[in-house]
Amino acid sequence: MLKQHFEQPVRFVTYTGLKDLSVVRTKPYIIWGKEAKGKTMIVSKLDILFAFPKEKMSDLKPHIKVRAPLKAENLQPIETVAERYSVDDELLGQARDNKSNVNIVTRAGYVLSGWIQQFDKYVLYMRIGEKMVIVYRHGLYDFTVAGQSEDAS
Image 1 (cartoon, helix red, strand yellow):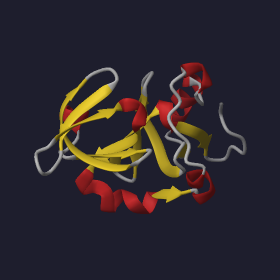
Image 2 (cartoon, rainbow, N blue to C red; image 1 turned 180 degrees about the horizontal axis):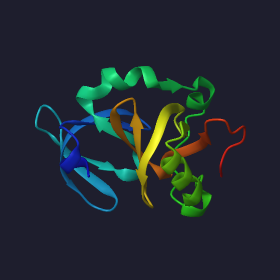
Image 3 (cartoon, helix red, strand yellow; image 1 turned 120 degrees about the vertical axis):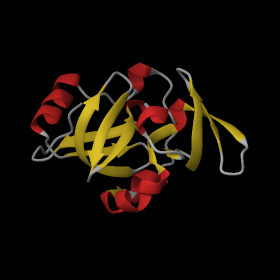
Image 4 (tube, rainbow, N blue to C red; image 1 turned 180 degrees about the vertical axis):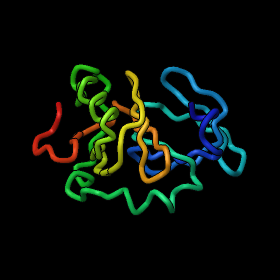
């Protein structure tokens, strides 16, 4: 998905900051890419919260907020699947089909607002404005559909 549908380089938002890479190869748990200076970098997918084409940052920035208290907690990736925050696929399907506005909060405190275009077992393909963002499900902290007062876990 990253190489086929995203303009390069891709901006990966991770627990430790931003990484801009031209994606070379992906495997189940890692992404190989090249930085602007040509240096090869390997990024663990568990460290990635969301990703989008780097050049779209200015379009997306107004739609991405930060929950400072959550960011200050400095949460780290959860390796055990059973301990991760989970969103029911049925709820995701309803939100997608209805094009409902959703808010996604990552474990690093980023709040993304948009709508779900598609999803699979590992990622949510989210439209924010007119731009596509890939949100990795292992990095979710909270998920709400507009008009719901409680999270959807």
